[in-house]
Figure 1 (spheres, helix red, strand yellow):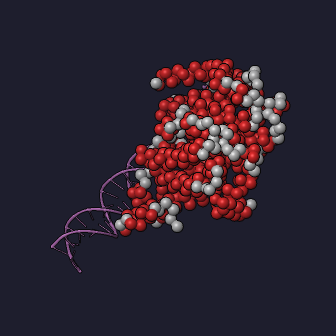
Figure 2 (cartoon, each protein chain N blue to C red):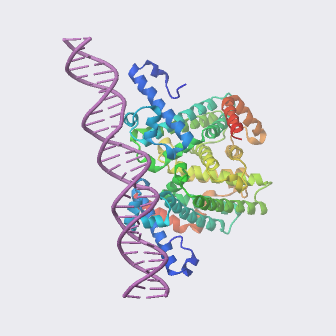
Figure 3 (tube, rainbow over the protein chains, first blue to last red):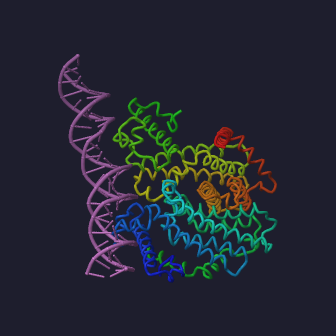
Length: 256
Length: 256
DNA sequence: GACATTATTTGACGCTCCGTCATATGATTA
DNA sequence: TAATCATATGACGGAGCGTCAAATAATGTC
């Protein structure tokens, strides 16, 4: 399956379809090369060689190396959004749905640690300065989509009476807090810092616990004091992300 | 004043002192260049020209460009640690001291946004892969120092009975949660994403509120429900960081 | 002070990689 | 088939990193 090919692409003339297809081929190849040899080894020449087109052709698709990497990022964020939508659509309480988003985020970053690195690279000013305004806009729009998805869910919770006495500002703060906790937590957990040596237990559990505490603090019903949060975690995982969890455990068995 | 010159440096033979001094000059210059023209414009040639030494001499001090940037990072983290120690030493409740660390972190990142960018760059694998094992070790040791400082403070809180029924694992989780929230929050707040356009209020306030909520959730006394947290914020700022806050407001007046 | 020896500095050079553009190749139409 | 247009190519210029033999300065010796 070619990721990122939208349905309407099938209706385009042959030529344009070929171009779109090649664009995906280039991105697939670049992603594979990063996975195999790391970002530092990624060069336009090597990509060209791998896809069996010349460098000039690559530059017909992407205006710069940074542009290519950013496009890769956008694809990743799109995949993340798909997971988020699945989580958001879970038939349960608003709090369960919001919690599911947290799990989706953790799962994605554990399944694709190198994509996270890419996102980090694009966040770097040194790279961002070389991006076209449109590409920056594209990425911003995707991040906006994610935030909006979370905000809508908080809106649902307020409407359902699951969060008591919340003004707009507090709603913003909840999303910001939840999001930044996940963001910072994943960055910490997957950084080279050997957390174990510092006496830390694996990050996921801590992240989950802290997220639940934060939601408790905002009074988001039902509180974790009357919920078996461990059971909730496994229930959400199997109901929404069985495929992803399966991949993850396979990888762990493979590497361990 | 030359930052990073330790006291014992004065006792070294003249030659070694000169070398240390030049090292600081190079770092100062590189930092100034990043502040003025951005990381993308930073080249070894330009640094050499600016300090009026040749490129080869720069390479006598730093084994690579990445090594230089990492050294810059280490200096920054050292400055951060100094702020943290000041916060940790505040004569107040354990919760006030912990909260002060949060303020210190926010202040530092607002006063030195470009240093934050540097830290982000060094977190990137593309850069980290080119670092010597010793430099990575140096940076890790500094981060360890920070974490340990926080852990000790949580230890104080447990001992003083300010946090109820906490095992080691929970202590880890508190530090991890607080830290990742600050980390992710600052990254979000200072990223290019126009948070305002998304209806977000400035990040600092949200970060402060969320941090307090998290500490509440862990039952860290005295709870924010019986404290005027806004007053606490300003009290800590003026007691510990009046100089920094002054700089910050000056800058804001200057730019606005 | 003159010379020998050691340490440090220098910048020209090799190398890698990005991005361009004139040319070559292939597709489409008359 | 020939003319025209679209696309692909890779040689080339330029930027910047890191090296190293030669030049320069510092130190030690008589």
